[in-house]
Image 1 (cartoon, rainbow, N blue to C red):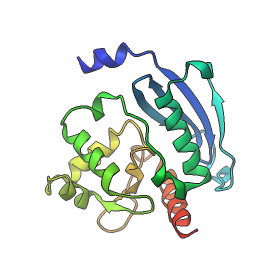
Image 2: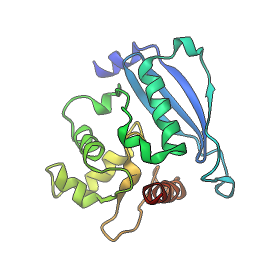
Image 3: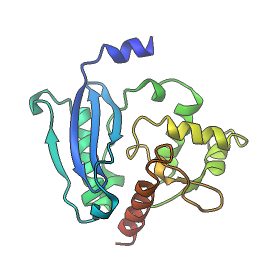
Image 4: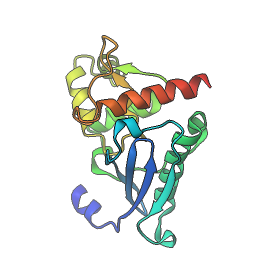
Length: 188
């Protein structure tokens, strides 16, 4: 039923050029479905000062307010990161974020309780979500996060303080960049 509801949506995609590379934000009139970081920029070419420009794949008149809100939040995250705490997040419209599943619960706790510039261990997040022995399952929930950056799975680190994997290990350098970006934005 959830997959059927999602498939009935008329989804639009907006692509952003960011210091991480191209970010595709996909959503419908009900909210953001997914965010995908394409990793199409070599790490040496990344710059904190890199401009973030909007590239619209569909007609702007057809872009839903929720999708537009997600794009505006991401633009602020890269250009004025300290302002994101006061910006409204878009609604989310992905089955993994609906209902009372473990993944949904953990992602909602992360979004609500771990603020900009902060980090939390997998173990501590499991405890915060009411399942103290589920640190490994928290890692699985992070891998299933359909809207990275908006729900900040990059802020979840290992108990030893190591950053841990990001995007199934393919984006570890991006996680480091995001954590540094937030640390600098918090200090600035």
